[in-house]
Image (cartoon, rainbow, N blue to C red):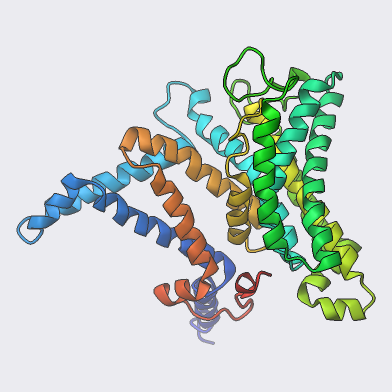
Amino acid sequence: MSTEAPEKPRERSAASVVQAIWSANTVTVTVLAIVAALLIGAVLIIVSDPDVLATYGYFTARPSDALTGSWELVSEAYANLFKGAIFDPEAASVTAAFRPISETLTYAAPIVFTGLAVTLAFRGGLFNIGAQGQAVMGTILAALAGFLIPLPIGVHLVVALVAGAAGGAFWGFLPGILKARFGAHEVITSIMLNYIAGLFLGWIIMQAGVHDPNRQDAISKPVDASAQLPTLLGDQRVHLGIVLAALATWGVSWLLNRSTFGFELRAVGANPDAARTAGISVTGTYTMLMVVSGGLAGLGGATQLLGTSYSLNPLVAGNIGFDGLLVALLGRGKPWGVLWAAILFGALRAGGNRMQSYASVSLELVTVLQALIVIFIAAPALVKAIFRLRAARAARLSTSIAKGW
């Protein structure tokens, strides 16, 4: 019996593993989309530096100048991106060395909630572009509960979080009921509600009892210490919100895959007519879906306020609602994918600040990287063509993003 016979199955097994990895599956496409975005970002970094760009004028005479300068510039930029987002080995203390990951998780926490809000609506066939307005209403209600209602420690925080969720849920209910009862398109109504929420925020900040009497600018009183989210690592900014975000991710995953409501909303999202024929209330599902989605976005706003900002100001919610839309796209409609996508966006945000300070790279480049990642994720066929990926055998890439799930 030949001793070489057993080697053939091993060779086939190794080859099949390589083929499975280098195929158009979701994980490979996502990783390669990030790689492609970083490569294009490297080109933009080189083009934006006049000194390095000048070396390409005599590239044929001394190519080493251009190549060395480009490598040093790009490596320094991305090294600072890493040091600002994950770990800084040059820090003076262990605590300072881990501060970057704290900043990443702090930025990620509210985006997880808004990303889950958009994802849940997508899975039900709706496009909740109003997550920004719902997050703003969440910050308002959480702030009012945080400094207007004196409550003991523990209870106060819970009440403020519930108030934030209620504010977002109500703001989500409006486009939901308009869609369910009157057929009004949720994109149009939720966009208009975004504007209303922003204007309402600017108005309420300046009202007596809300505005900070010790300040001349547009800022509210700070929430009581009993309503603030506790930090997790001493003087680091990361707070309980990231734990709540992880729990919310698990909850949404369970809701979608294990609950009756999750089955109904997925059925309505796949085919409303078939769901109606099967006895599912499409009207009720749409309304409840937007309420839950808005509640999640409101929690995102409440987390931002109670864990980071503490006071209302016109920019308190930032762009967490719109970032949630991008995170939902990057997460491809899966709750745990949303969590990791939000951490990636948080890392880009935290690392981008250091990259701008230490490598003189514009912070806008981080926004470009985010946009490129989303573009490649939303166009898997483009990534497949660029990297010549094989068609996935076990799991075909879903085209649901193009359809809105």
